[in-house]
Length: 259
Image 1: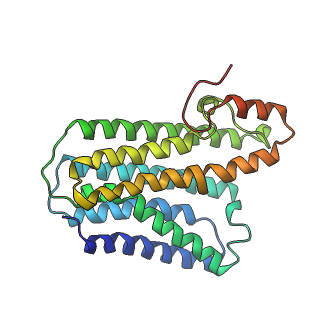
Image 2: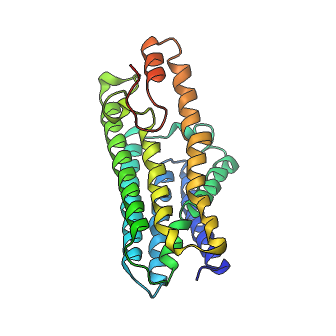
């Protein structure tokens, strides 16, 4: 049964990992471990609650595998990217300020803990629930999201790595059908995870819907889409081709371009 004690573990572990990585990042004024710590925290939390639970059934192995695969993909991709680009422009003027930098790490620790709640409910549960339609549906949604964001990230990385595409935006491949397909895939992953957790929810545990709602709101209204849209609007404000791409292409959900 999930308790306040377990909730303290979730937030405590998440914040502890961020503190360790933050002290290293702040000491060396580096961006190389910010995204690394993000993905690793999901994996560590997943394995902690899996090993803590004496009951290991199909849903537990499924969710642990999902969290591990998702986290490793993110860690490997973002670590390779930061090694290539050297520094993350998001932290220009931030990494030099101890408290501003610390605020980012605090928010990251909070985000991981909230987003992971549905997965942790499953991993911590001892209820005997095997494969059913909600687990099947949630798994399909999660897999779709993982494939979408993996393809989107790979296509954008290859596009940006080509010197001929400098100062251009990507509008090919999966990006032809959405201006932010990677974020769409990310949302699908965590809504899929929430659906998998449905058979394990009762009473106050339904509040874990805050996990997928949180990541959706963050990407839609705070640190995901808004700053990128603002950046591109300013950068390409006089570019008719970009305005046409923006006008005809879905903001988030994959859909056919307007004629």
